[in-house]
Amino acid sequence: MRIVIAEDSALLRDGLTRLLSGGEFEVVAAVADAEQLLRAVAELQPDLAVLDVRMPPGFTDEGIKAALVIRRQFPDIALLVLSQYVEESYATDLLSEATNAVGYLLKDRVAHVNDFLDAVRRVAAGGTALDPEVVAQLLVRRKDDPMSSLTPREQQVLRLMAEGRSNGGIVEVLKVSPSAVEKYVTNIFAKLDLPPISTDHRRVLAVLKYLGA
Amino acid sequence: MTALLVAAVGITLLGVVGVVWGAAIFSLLTGAGDAAHVALYVAAVVVGPVAELMAVQGVTALQRSRLRTIAGIDIPVGSRTAERKPWPLGPWLSASIWRQVAFHLLSVGIGVAAGVVAVCWLAPVIAVTYLIVGAPSGAPAAVSCAGALAMLFAAPWLARQVAVADQTLARALLGPSQSEEFALRLESLAKSRAAIVAATDTERRRIERDLHDGAQQRLVSLAMRLGLARARFSDVPEPIEQVIAEAHEEALLALSEVREFIRGLHPAVLNDRGLNAALSGLAARAPLPVRLTVDMAQSAAPGVEAVAYFIVSEAITNVVKHAQATQAEVTVASDGSLLRIAISDNGVGGAKLGGPGASDGGTGLMGLMQRAASVDGTLTIDSPPGGPTVITAELPCES
Image 1 (cartoon, chains in turn green, brown):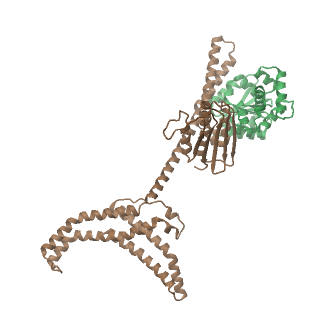
Image 2: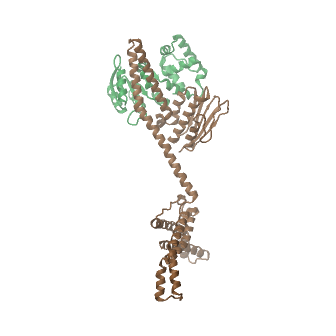
Image 3: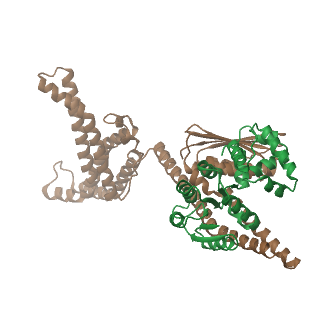
């Protein structure tokens, strides 16, 4: 998997490069701002771009804007956006363009190395990785509280689905049997009046749409 | 002498303009004769008030500069409200112009008094002249000399009295009136308060930026490296593995504490996307379920949004600390001129707020009220024993 990294902090750029080197991963370029990122992506055509939100020159949402540009120009390149803060309004922007092969995670998640690498693989494979905090932010804005009709276990499963996890991923996190997860998912879709969906990706899409992202 | 001169010039100017205006009106009323005269009179009547106004203001300026150069005192200019009223008649409706006119009339008296002072200073010269040429009234020489001496001795005292009277009058009539002075004071207080609020805001942003670029990046890097060590060295002896795991957890905790601190201080998203976007994070991170409803047609001034954010942030912290609530609700609505914020919970109530300076039991509600007041807003607390507690803030959208 060929990766381009854009991160203005040299310390983190080095750290990420080290983390994403070796094995299946290869960092083909590590740059410090959005402009260099767009150039590197156009030139190198990587499989995945890992990028920071706040970069020079404005230090606001350059990463989100760059991600949207990349998605429009090169729809096949997967995008993983990292940030010190995750904000539902940035997530909504990012997801407005596409919900496949896209991730938006708090930088802290990098420190849970194996989980992070799982998220990288998931996004590169066309899936979604939304930070649990983004999902929580989407939930506080729902007028009819979707959580009130769900059992605590079902609430957990809904959150995990919104993060972009597959049934297998949910099984791993909750340490329950695959058939139990299937039952929860069926119940959630029935309670929220969503049509039953078989594939992981379309399921994520339905849940995010339901949450208003 | 200058006082006499300026007063004379001033009053003559005002008088001439006034008389011409009055005469023009009189002529119009009593029948003006041919069309050319009527036109002339009408022009005089129309131009009169404007010319008089300019004359009053001109003479006032002259008097001000006289007082500045001769007496060395600066008479502060009152509020500019008179000048801001629509010409030509608007300024005549303000008290300030009439106070100036009164001064110019009274300054004739001051001028005359100054003339008397001058005569006093010259008394010996006059007396000597009389002695040489012979006094017209035929007063005895001794009386002339004694009178002249008395006048000379009285001169400095008299001069001081005239100067004091002159300056007192000028301060009272040319300077700002008491209400104008209060208005000026209020204006300057409002300006300095706005500057302080803005400076606090800038300082918070700077701290946020510094932490983001410094400590936060280092902590992420540290946590990432420890995470890498934890993932890659799983075959090390148990005690070492445990130390690495603990260090990793500590680093993550420090990272989330710094982020939480900044969240309460001034999150970047507040600058970037405004209050509406910033509140999602606040509500989602609360340790109890918070329902958020925002209805803002347009954003408020950045300083006001920062205060609103702070109020919501502190109010939620209060709910968590004191209310024993299981859920809270935040509603923010704006009609473009007023930003209304309500934070309610289903807790035990009984939140109290003392008077100014009183203790509020450490709930920080006083601080919230002061923050609201810093942008001319109000904050009310309704918290009967047994609950529920509702905190309502109303902030003007423009600061």
